[in-house]
Image (cartoon, rainbow, N blue to C red; front, side):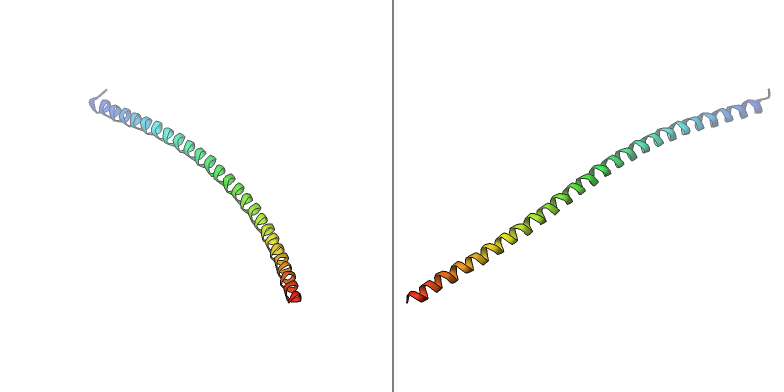
Length: 94
């Protein structure tokens, strides 16, 4: 073996070692990315579920508000009848 062959083998060995380290680093980065993606998907699903639940609560509240509005309108109508009756009674008494 000549000195140039040894030098060439040293360079090849260094390149192989560098590639090995790069592959290992890339493998770790890919694993980290997958883990982050899984966490993101899990959190996204949680937030979507929370949104759907909130939407259901809002819809129920809207229904409750409509029912209360109908009750208030009914009470207002009844109050108007009572007032007309009372004022009508007072007018008849005078």
